[in-house]
Length: 210
Image (cartoon, rainbow, N blue to C red; front, side):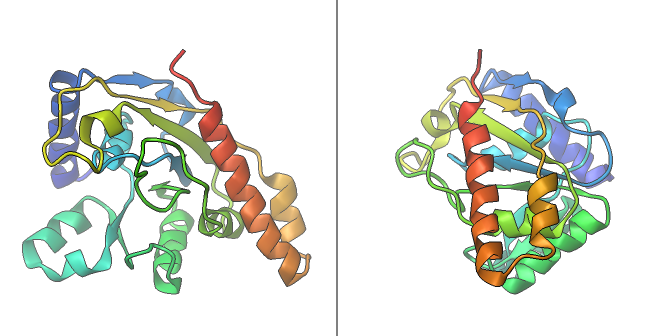
């Protein structure tokens, strides 16, 4: 962690432990170095730093490309390993940036649903994460956040002191689908992307607090 990241990481840990009374469960499932894809449900703006703050390694985060145009904000985002993506996070340039981070040995947080939930329920996954998984060799760790919708969902302008938690699941094995994707037809490849996304979302759904 660089100094800026370390300061942010420490500050978020303090906020989460005091204001939100957080729980961090099974962080040992995430490797301490090397590439990794952390795939999580998405209920709030506080989800990305929550997931990253629970780990003793630096993470890469997605941030809207337009934010990098502001000098101070852009500097902070870069120092916190933010990856510039377009509004939907599915553009070709953004995907290349994500894959470049993984190929360089970094870990990144992705949200299969693509956007924050509107009602607190898990949403169907988009196939974009399947493409990233297939194009990389990084292990995929499903993650589930709890309580963040009640704490700071779309319906709130100010975060509430509601208990939150993050649990890191066991890695998912995509060896067979990655192997098939190397030689299959384009129509089948698109199916594989969605199958990967669906498997990841099913693994996230299966994670519980107990």
